[in-house]
Image (tube, rainbow, N blue to C red; front, side, top):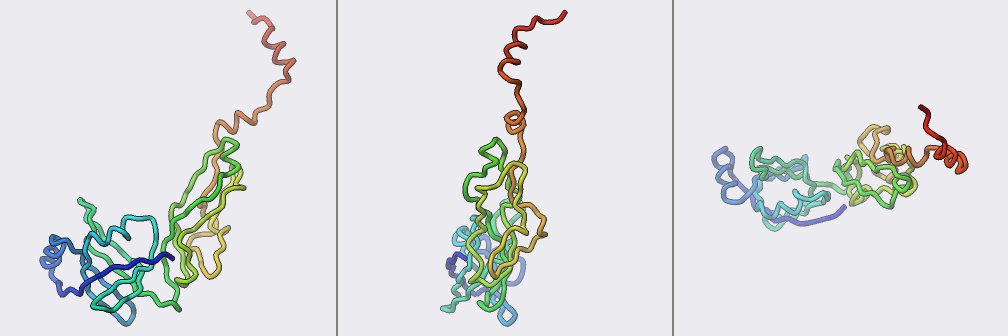
Length: 205
């Protein structure tokens, strides 16, 4: 997985009014936690943009009072009207314990079915996976070169050592749909002689 860093400060704001004032000053309240640790923090809203407004998934090294905590973003809440972040939770990761994250889906190559006139359909832009941080890739990259018309790649087709996809095995990730172009290109045509005869035949009254 990709890594990035954030600086945070401890906070002692607890009431709704305190939290609202914190947000007005440009900070977002949040928590850093695991089964043994719980820190109440505040982070500059501008610094959060690099992890909130991106399709990538990161291990985020959060520095608080000189100590660094490797984390993953567990939850982010946004204002219903302004869509600005209003709260974030970070889970501390242990290299020996599996974590659950979502990964972006990236397709590689041009599908044979698309070359034949079909339409590529990506049903899942992100997938949820579980595994150790060291085993989880930056993204789920799928080679679609040999994907024909009417064919799909489902979750059960994906194999990553040490990583489990948390979706039903028959759930489609990407496929090539049949289109009118495919139907027309595969319709049988009359031999050239028959076509010419048909063209010369007088119309029936």
